[in-house]
Length: 586
Ligand code: ADP
Ligand code: ADP
Ligand code: SF4
Image (cartoon, rainbow, N blue to C red; front, side, top):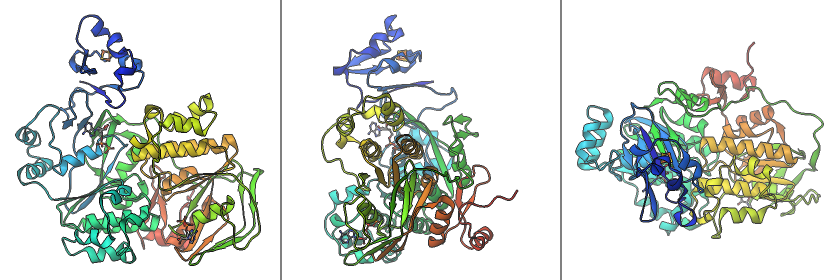
């Protein structure tokens, strides 16, 4: 079984010499394996011999040819000839939160559109509902789809990109939320999500984190049979993430809740079961049967799915069990005194500290606690109220909220940012691992949220500066993209001897990325206290003690897992003060 997929956005026959057709061996011997229709190529899969020559010859990397195992059934859905193919479907389970874990572009939204009745599955041809139902007959999924086909299913859906909400709604938050109050749960949700103070605010004036919580409330307030949340973590701090997890678990009592989430500590805490999706983004995706959440995440990290008998990655994603050792004799980039900053209603107090050259420092703390203010003061953009220093450090900054302002290509933006664009270092250490090559010639305004994020991280690292500050680089990146970005940032810091500071709320990313931690505590919007950079163990202990959470280590992958509050391990770890790096018994 072979599938040939052509990415219609990338394919630009006007700008090439039709290399795919010219070099295709069967075409040369007279078969019509590749033909051009309306100036676009069409590949006939059963005439293709799978040599892969067209894949290598296409100057835009628009073609993917995949050999699938013989026993694979026809796809559940295919976007036409040479379009993306989806195999399998997740199963909504009443009374449970089910997670979906997979790369961007692997078919998650397609699957959800089918389950919501927005997209009728075509089985890769032009199948009728009867044919679809026959295929799934006698299964839980079959019963569910029958309901979708017969009377439709009432679905509530939280979209992935909450930044777009102000484009379709205007007016106060109350107006938007009131019309979603279908089961009398709105008041409780507003309270739980901390939205009471925002009810009279204009939607257009909300921050990303506020929009995220409004969107979650609006979805959960509906009276639906199937609830779907496409990413809940972007722009929320750890407190808020855990809070949303509890809200969705309550919602699942008697309802089916499905969640796409790339923050693995959160997914682990939130879901009971997960479906993994593997394949090639943009070409095809295969949805596995549901797995227990612990096993599923472990298999995903290890890159090996034994039940399906597939390897999805050549390398496992591994965690260091012990805190990284501190290296001595590292040059100091900046040695700063204590300082404070007073705004009319907010005070920041920073203890003195040292940031070293070539290190990655993770920054942990809730939203509104003064993290950006702190950085602006180090950068000399803001003056401290007390504390006398003038560091004049040049800072390159990636903001939390991204907007493609100008209509230029990715390549042009990066060329304008760095003189090193063509150097082999830049190409092999930054561009390639960040996966930007496929959309180099696309305009910034055409990019998806995850693509724009990767461009913004790359642009930030491309500028000439002393300190690089990235605010929430994980937003909208999938698990593999997070890991690759972490590697790029670490290597960048090491090889250029600059310092990279990263604010993020994904504990796994912070763990993989940081050598030391700056922890912020206090009361958001009122008082922030910034501690000096700590080594990892101390930093994690201070941070987690502050939010009252302990982590244990998974026996198999050593990944951190949130302990159940009050459990034996939770109590023991609190007593010993080890919130994160469990001391292993010999
Ligand atoms: P995910 O939600 O995992 O990011 P999607 O289900 O949105 O993935 O998309 C999977 C693939 O299907 C993408 O490569 C996308 O280009 C393609 N695709 C999505 N919608 C359509 C459509 N309406 N027509 C053709 N291709 C589509
Ligand atoms: P974080 O980066 O941790 O989310 P910020 O440093 O952005 O926090 O903000 C901390 C607090 O300081 C917030 O309550 C914010 O409203 C307030 N603040 C930030 N900048 C200013 C300013 N220029 N004037 C008045 N208040 C400000
Ligand atoms: Fe032709 Fe080979 Fe491409 Fe198949 S893989 S379409 S045979 S060039």
